[in-house]
Amino acid sequence: MKIDIIGAGSLGLLLAGRLTQSGNDVRLWCRGGEQCRKLKDEGLTVSYEDGRDPTSISGDRFMSAPIEGFADAYLREPSDWIIVTVKQDILHNVLPEFLSPLKDLREQQVHIICFQNGIGHMEMLSNLLPKANLYAAVTTEAAKRKSLTEVIHAGAGEVWIGEWSLKNGQTHNIHTDLQVNYLIEVLIMAGFSAFLSNEVDTMIYRKLLINAVINPLTAIWRIPNGELLASEERLQLMKELFREATMVYDACGVTYDHDAWDNILKVCRTTAGNTSSMLADVLASRSTEIRWINGSLVEMAERTGTLVPLHRLICQLVEGI
Ligand code: PAF
View (cartoon, rainbow, N blue to C red):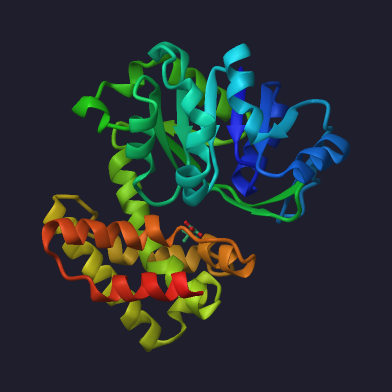
């Protein structure tokens, strides 16, 4: 399968490494020229925390190039799937320029799958590329980028893929979609536990709730996820963020699991030693996804007249950092 991966962060590198290794034709679009050069010279390494031997993929087995060249390359030689793994801020502020040349392509030609945390990006992309087939993915894979050319696979998770249902207000049964079924097969061959879902929106909102409670507090306090459970004061703040978020969901008609709070505690326990993605951004002086996580909840609250003072404050604190 021919696959374009836009974004060479931790998830982009993990996908590129494994998909190349299992025989696919991968083009990896990076934000910086230095990363492209290094990937060409040094290749890409996927290493594992459980002591397994690392996998090294030589730089001539896949293409790595600066994102600026993406549309030209795609128009010359389209791929079967475009996988977008850049963070939300790049997706909103940088990518439109590089994706807009595809806007007139016929529907069957462009298949895009987005892996972002938070919400807001699918609407943006469906406005930008009204004829594209847009899919969303929710993943619990844990990956950390060690260098520009090395990613550590810190924990195996799952990848759930579904069609974004806001497209023209219609949905179709994704299980009958050949192109996406083929992608699932390819991901499984590459070693991922990948599944189709007709309820990917529900999964996105479930993950949003987890991220909105865990990520900003770990970023502000600079602690791994498990330490959120270490004191009653921390738990109280988490609980208040959770309470406000569920009020917003109730007001917007978004459903959530009856054990959603317990599930957040479980995520803290199972990822106890992990640095959340937002803390990783703060530590690397990158902009965070706060606007599309807690900020999205604030926007939903504004639309429905719900009060979310703690989410507002948290957004300001993280933006301040
Ligand atoms: O964003 C993240 O870091 C992760 O989604 C999660 C679940 C909070 C674990 O670190």
